[in-house]
Length: 345
Image (cartoon, rainbow, N blue to C red; front, side, top):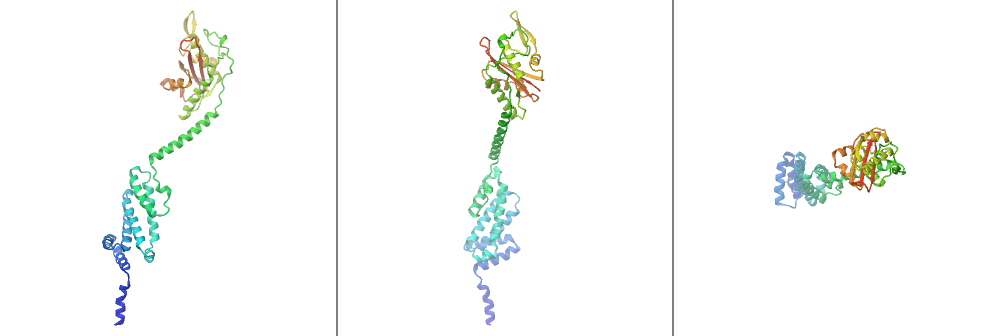
């Protein structure tokens, strides 16, 4: 009789927490959904017990595992974290060990990290990312910074574009610095030139402002490099050809690609543009732009840049060398004249 009493008394030696855990575990092994509902029911009646939180945590995590859409995993993982925290706060040391809780907590953290990584860079899920991030940061220690920092794809693209632009600008500046330009020596013989006759190709006229000529070529070469075109190199013979034609137009008061000579106060066409350029530089001439009225490089560049035909000459892929001429004649009708010409070699 005494033995029977002892045997009957053993089940009652288990605590309420232990009996609850044992009951829920038995149901969980057979049907997780029933265990989940039972845990919620017990939880509603007694919030001091840890076990109901544990089994709800397990079910929420399992449901998250089965959910294909990342965004739909978020509320399940948030609930799993909530249950996990409640269980940890209420469970005794023995129950923590029995459930292998620390390992399960680590697994949950890894799942949350994977979810956050998947949500990152998707602007449509930014709100859900923030909710899960805030919940996880408040519970887990040492969440990786690169995971919890939302990467806005638009801002990231802008930053990458800025970096690329800065790198390209650095490369352009380097290439511009490497170009060695050679202008004709400043020994103009324009006073001895008779512009009513065809040039010989030996003429050498000083620029009105060589700094503006250099500035124009710098503007053009920067733009060519931005378009992945070869920068142009100043050719002194092409410069002489350009300056001569600019001064010829100023002195003879005409505006044309064809050279014109004034005979008995009447202008007569004498040479085509390429025939004239060949006299100075017989090296594959392939374009010429002319302009009057612009007093500086920026204006001259803008005018040609915004004119389709002149733009084509500025950015002709086959061009390698360039001549630029900027002259001023107070007695001419238009005062300022520009000529730009290129060659393939």
